[in-house]
Amino acid sequence: MGSSAAIRVQASGTEPLQAFRAAVAGRPRACNGFGSLQQVTRRLSAAAIVLAAGIAASPLRADPGPFTGLAGNWGGGGTVALEDGSTERIRCRAHYDVAGPRMTLVLTCASDAYKFGLQAEVIAEGSAISGTWTETSRGVSGVLQGRGGGGNFQLAASTAGFNANIALATRGNKQSVSIRADSQFRAANISLSR
Image (cartoon, rainbow, N blue to C red; front, side, top):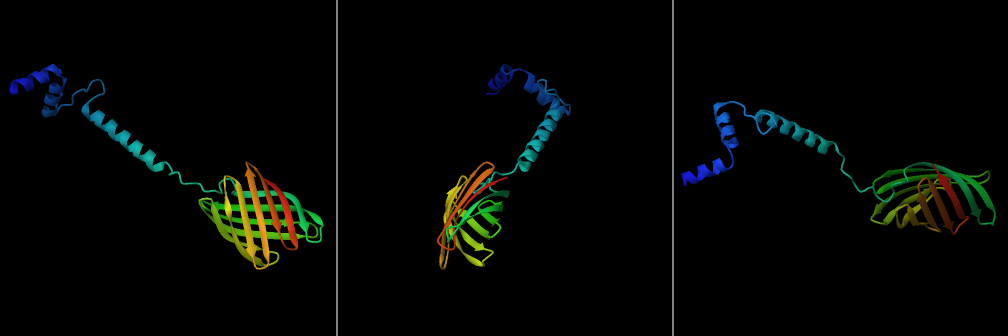
């Protein structure tokens, strides 16, 4: 048994045996051109520390949510149609505050004779969206429900005596907002950019 073990050691060369003898004697032994055993150990330790630091520093990729691409300030204009059949040209500003599946919207539009302001807070669960809205210039509020993602949203805003459908489409730095309602305010078509 002992002779076969000796044969195996000799068959694999004398390098492992010399390294073992050097380690027992307390002397560093060169390891195939990589430097001493201590140098190899130091290099591996340093590599492990760099790898661990890189992993710790890299951010986890969270699901960005359906409102990605909306965040920030937008401006533009369009038209609003009133109950008496008249239309007004309007200028609009919008601000979207996005945090993952949550979004807050502030939209203000005005002409010389007409003004409306919409604030909304919504949350997405998959493609389903729900939340609340307030029309600030008239003090009316209600609930929002709908679906969307990928820059396209179809929402319904409702409260006692008022219903409106809102379509929002975003492509890059361009956005269109279409509102259809069943009250004094009949419709709005708005184009925004940033």
